[in-house]
Image (cartoon, rainbow, N blue to C red; front, top):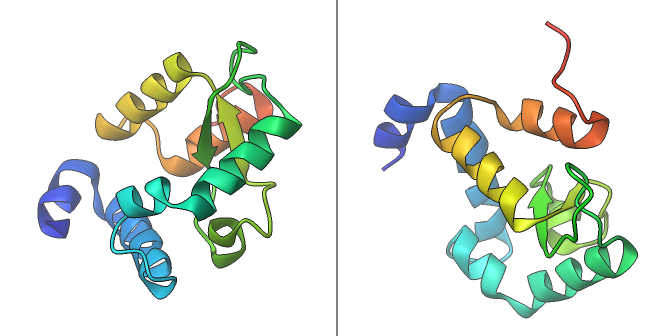
Length: 120
């Protein structure tokens, strides 16, 4: 699975998601999907959206949250500074950019924080 992912998305992206999955497994989640279905994530997501309902990319109403980091503090909800509220349209664009290998995760986070791509 990882080798096919690496072929399509590159070694850096494969390592990034492998690292994320290892952190999730350390907290008892078998997959990212299981984490997103968990009461832990639902509580974290609610706190983030209660604080700010505006999409950090376009300003529309946000109902999703993008993970800027997958470290232990963020996964557990102790640190929400790397969780970004986004609308469905912008999340779709983010997912597409990752899937098509157009932007790295770091570039997407930079865009969400600053509203524009990083300088070349």
